[in-house]
Length: 253
Image (cartoon, rainbow, N blue to C red; front, top):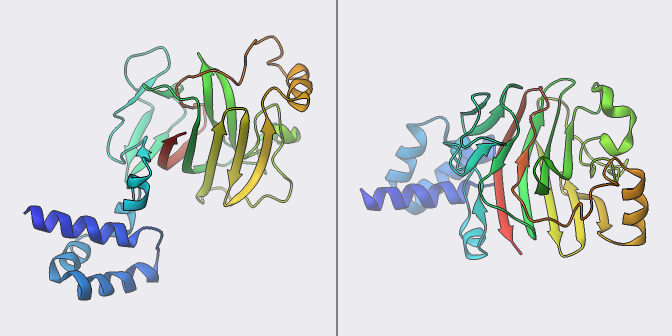
């Protein structure tokens, strides 16, 4: 049994990053290199392509990356001001889903300097976001938005990928349509802050710089001393709209 589990784990790791016909080809190659057990495990479960989500490669493990979401449960999370997740947050088919009635979801662990990668998709005219370096419900926010139909799209700093209220994501960004998965990345180390969207850096700013101070003073956060420098939980925002997340991986820096 242990040997079969090891084979299946190796098979899943080799399938990371593949989809569609590439997965079918990979399954046949795996069968040739790891034997019939791997092929049987893949063929017996048509959701194999989904199972490669929310896992870490051997390279990621060696670099001390961790999963914030295991694809099966809400372990390590709770709703803001509660000791457990709200009922509006659900895990379905390896996806972390908010139906708009769950309250903000936060990690039980605190973070300050880290790299976070994740995938997200939003409902039509929907709004959500990922907050970090938080204090209570305040924090820097990676905006998740339907740029086409949400009423907040008139402010460039409120559009998808932006550092909410402070720095607008580049106009040249690549944003997938509603219902399709986008890949996000947040990098914060010391005073350096970066947002990435679908492989492109769309936001970069230095906390405490003249540019930062100017933007902060003009924002709604101008009275929050130390805003952007705190250590706190990662927060997934419930903005009363359905949103989906998966593959949340973090590396402390």
